[in-house]
Length: 335
Image 1 (cartoon, helix red, strand yellow):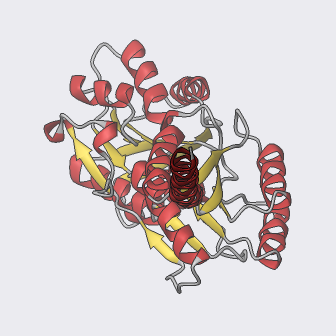
Image 2: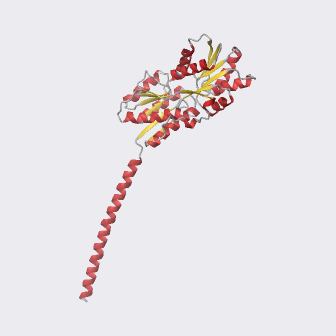
Image 3: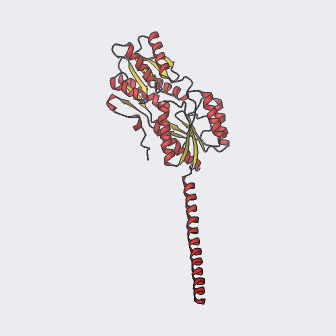
């Protein structure tokens, strides 16, 4: 009887000992599991929160900028918001910037706006230690940290040189620009004018506004051809201008003898180049702009010094340069 009791005591002791051991062992494992899970969660949290504010949200050109920015954000573990006016509207644009600042984001990437209030907002952001990177359109008089985008004066100059090289004899040239008050559009017009200024055979007969819509470009082209039926060449300074011009020229002329140089490579622009209605287009790299803007913003948040002007690529392409896809215009920045 005593033997059985002792055996039961020993067995009970061993069971308790085993239970304690297993509790300690799996408790430690559980503790490490939660530690590792917490560490993984922290690692997956975005490092920064940036806001990209375009001229207008539903725009093919700005969607390419957005795609570049989103790819860079994904690669660098950044949370990126794409906010702004549905259609170009300076007041809505400025309100969006103000909201981003109030939200204490880590950086604002925005098209520059030619308004005193824009400069005030950029200064306000700087005081709150929120860097501002301008993209596509610069605002050099403001406190923006960096500009990422096309050298707009140079791109206009390239367009003017292309017209000189591609034409002979007297040319009566009409310009259709997105918005008269937009700084980047002004620079594209001025660069073009300076490129042809020394050539007496080139006469600029009109500068009309499209309000960066295809319908606006169509209406402007109609007006120009009614007032100046002897127009021999067109230059469109925003992405939809060349498309609107080509639509009108194609309908009104039995033979497309008017030279058209446009901006950007939207699919419709490329179709008009293939068929010969548009002779050439100035190519920007919107994907590259978006990608580099995010990378420069990360550098600013890390306290790194950056050159304030970060110009992306620009070139003129012709029918012989095709095929080319808007999706391929990434400037070599995809990871």
